[in-house]
Image (cartoon, rainbow, N blue to C red):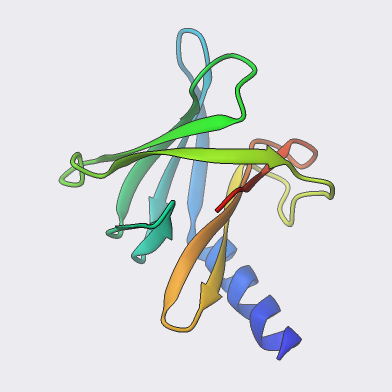
Amino acid sequence: MRSTLTRSVIGALAAVLLTAGVASAADVLEAKVPFPFVVSGRTFPAGQYTLERAGSNSSVFVIRGENGTAAAAAFVATRPAGNHAPADMPALQFKKTENQYKLSAVWESASDGQIVVN
């Protein structure tokens, strides 16, 4: 059971491509998510997304869809992660539960991560 969950998380990470860009006052993560996922009880379709902090030291992120998914937007509450990122680059981490993926963490770097609070 644990190995299945681990493979699901690793597979989800491998499928999400992120690039880091800089906005005027905050770092912005851009991600192409190839599958539908759930954040804060809302289902988001597969597509291109941006994530940025709601404030300079905020633990809240704003996620917005782009290119046909502009109606998809939400605030994401987080807390600091206590471990290291599973990747060496900015990454979104998902957990697969039954037939859906849930956003579980946002990694801005290998040492700076935030766990999504549900």
